[in-house]
Image 1 (cartoon, rainbow, N blue to C red):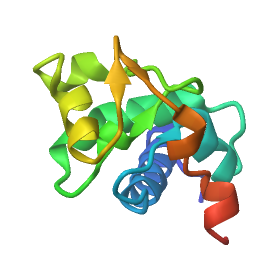
Image 2: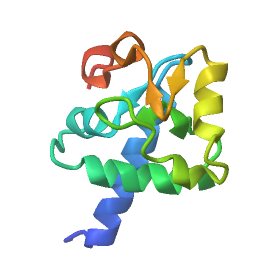
Image 3: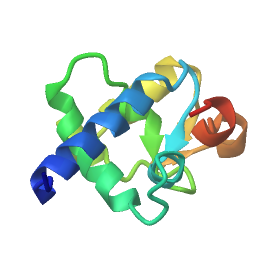
Length: 116
């Protein structure tokens, strides 16, 4: 049976959310790193869409997923524009002007940390 495109996207979104749940407290990852881990190297935008929908699912630390250089590009999806920065600060991550400071120090790479 051929899977409809929307069903494929739903499955991909679910896989994204499962990876996001594994990001440790005090660490961050990028949309692209999640996409690469899932074998969809060019699907970072799809990861972003999945993260946008994650606010309907309890237990997803969406604030820990940022762009490839540590910018808080998804902050508009949190209601309060400062919420993502405040959540990261509460985990010990310094954020100045929507930029995570010492990004590489806090970066969590699922391809290195998780095994398929």
